[in-house]
Image (cartoon, rainbow, N blue to C red; front, side, top):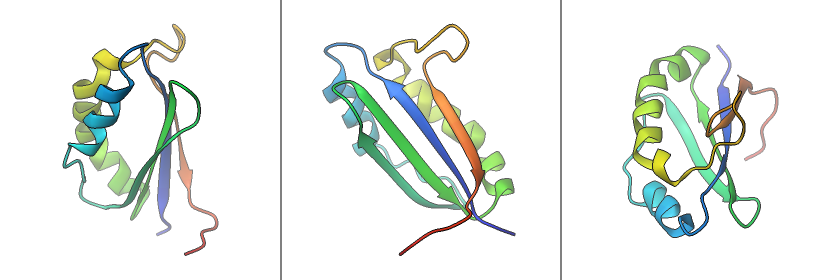
Length: 99
């Protein structure tokens, strides 16, 4: 089975950036099967988090925990669009990696 990854783009409400970052850094979010978890800031109020999982099954099993974590930071997020809501997620097989 190949590794599986996800990434999620967030837009943070004005004045909520510090609280949003603290929501990540103060959490102990580490679902079973997650090998890597990172977040970077891609704009003034835009952030992207990504994770690498042991397998697609591990990511699927972690979804309830990921949604529960999202609920802890949801109040800091702007709606990206009516279709997307407050997140812009992607996931797929890891095809290449470099350590």
